[in-house]
Amino acid sequence: NAGVTQTPKFQVLKTGQSMTLQCAQDMNHNSMYWYRQDPGMGLRLIYYSASEGTTDKGEVPNGYNVSRLNKREFSLRLESAAPSQTSVYFCASNPGLGTGELFFGEGSRLTVL
Amino acid sequence: AQSVSQHNHHVILSEAASLELGCNYSYGGTVNLFWYVQYPGQHLQLLLKYFSGDPLVKGIKGFEAEFIKSKFSFNLRKPSVQWSDTAEYFCAALTGGGNKLTFGTGTQLKVEL
Image (cartoon, rainbow over all chains, first blue to last red; front, side, top):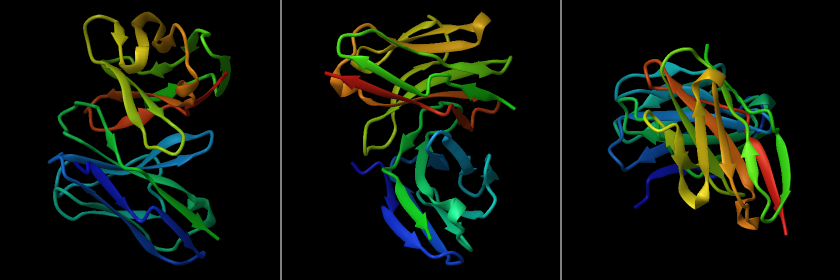
C-alpha cells in the first residue's frame, strides 16, 4: 500500500542545473499538489492539478513547471535551479470534490549550491 | 485571499501539561479546517478536521479542536501531552472551490520529560 511516492528523496544541484521531481499515487485520486516547506514559512503551494489534464499555479510558482502525465503521476520541474529553491518538497494527493484531506509523500530534500 | 495564522511558533511543555495551539483564519464564507502533524523526519498526517456540525472535533491521539466562527479560530487542544507528541503542527483551511488547502506557518512543539 504505497500511497504517495516521491523520487528522489535527496538531491544536490548546482545553480543553473535542471531536474525533475517525480510523484506518483496509487489511490486513484483526482487532485495532486506540490508544496515546498521552509523553516518558519510552513507549506506553500507551488502548483496543483485538480484533475487529470489540468494544472494551476499556487502561491509560489515562479521557477517551476509541472506536468500531470496521467491520473497517477504529477511531476515538478526546475528548469534552472537557484539557491532560493533549496527546500523540502512534498507531493500530495486528494480524492477531489472538496474533501480537503491531503495524503502526503515523504518529501524530497533539495539543496541548490 | 484567504490566510491562516498560527501565532505560537515554538512551544515547550513538560509531560502531562495541557496544550492549546492557536489558529486563526481570514475568510468570511464557508470554510473547512484541518490540523496536520509532522513528526520528526516524517511526512504530514491528518490529525483532525472540521467540515460542519459539532464545532468540537475530536481527532487521533487525544487531540481535539474547537471551531469558533465568531472568532475565526480553530484552536488545537490536548489535556495532557506526552513526549511522543513532540512534532510540528500545522493548521490549514479549505475554502471556495475546495481545491486548495492553505497552511499556517506551523508550531513546533517540544515536550520534555
